[in-house]
Image (cartoon, rainbow, N blue to C red; front, side, top):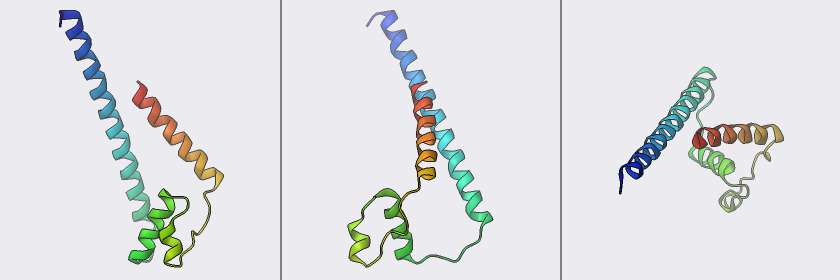
Length: 98
């Protein structure tokens, strides 16, 4: 490798590190915000089955597990939720592309 190639390689790695660092900051701030919201609104403790069901419901549209245990998804995803998730994903993509 000659000097310009080394410089280009190093600059790419620095940009990648900055992207990762920015992404981690964003994720940490979202986690902290989410935790604060949960702490502010007290609720009854959930059973293990309810926790598993809520995770599966968020991550999988049609969960065979939920049907097998006799639980049905509470609701389909609302358009407002989808729009908010799309905005969040767009922000993350923007940070990664910088």
